[in-house]
Length: 248
Image 1 (cartoon, helix red, strand yellow):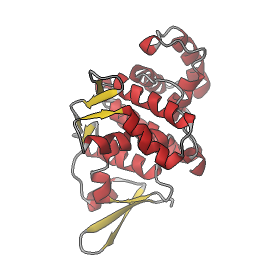
Image 2: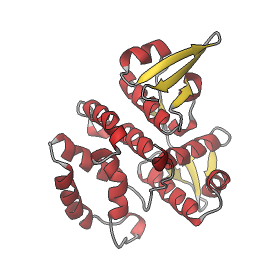
Image 3: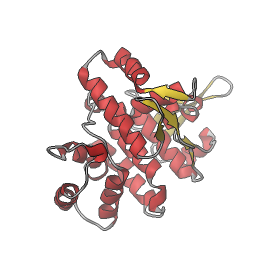
Image 4: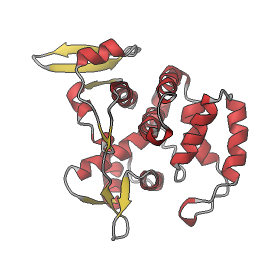
């Protein structure tokens, strides 16, 4: 898992319909080699977002591969996500993409977390504020700012952020309600994969600012452990519950 934490991995704006296209190919039974070939043709025909003309779409396939070619230890998680999305309307696939990308690329999740934290304090945020918080964690590197910018612009492209009047300023879109408890558990599990120790207090997961685009169901630790094959619940104190990945 450590090598995923070392990846920033976001090289350009990622469009949601690119992610949808990958999932549809997977549901149709295409294999990795076939998906890569189809993506080459599909992305070559795409109009670039915001007028930017990339020389290659290899950056996009890196993120898209979180679905069709995840790290070995994430294959069961990806397979479970795919089994859930199979019965969901494509209009509602965004949180599944959010979960799968976050598990593969914790930097994406962290950009979302810092964005959500700022929205907990104010109605409008500046991307420079997000950059500042990330630099405190990763250091003042150009790659941090560049990849954070691409992630934020992807959030805008996905409709979870809205451009405000000021340059580099954003407002939060109306959160998407999550009514499926299995999807809530999937998002929790994705968050656990972003933690090097694979664990978190349930109360912190419920209120994790990285889930700012969604309104999650309130679930008990007992229910989560009964429904999930990958999460254990450890109780301590009077009311605290710790969720932990079972392979950790």
